[in-house]
Length: 168
Image (cartoon, rainbow, N blue to C red; front, side, top):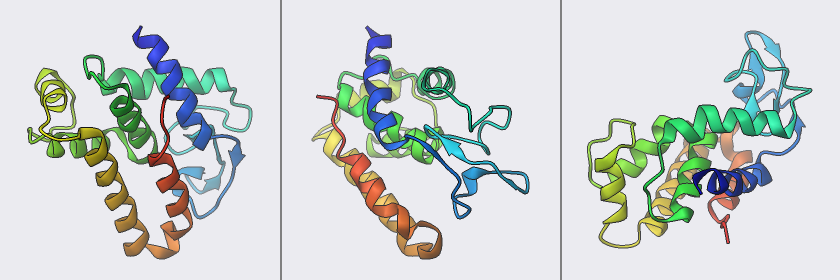
């Protein structure tokens, strides 16, 4: 069941992380002093041993499963849409940040690791965790675009579209 949810979630993430690009303004596209690129959201900076230009969708999914899905430890979170939001935020902004934002929202220790306490707090959140987490993401992205307009203003619309992605 969880692997099927992974497949569904990663297919949504890939809607926003498709194709090869070599944007010199995106620091993830650089390996050392060389502009390599990003494909399917797999960046040269984060995955220095991958052949980015020739990366396949299947290989990207393997990397997502190993380096994002498994470490996120989302099994046990009851809302699949919340799981998608955490995964997408982790891919876009880093696992630690995505988890810490969820933990702060759920009023638990923000240690960057999802365990039983975090899952229980998310599942028992007083209010609408999905809505509030999406709002947290929006505020974060708007902050980045405002603080670093030369680096991130061009990304803001795409980031906000990601937040609105739904599984069903």
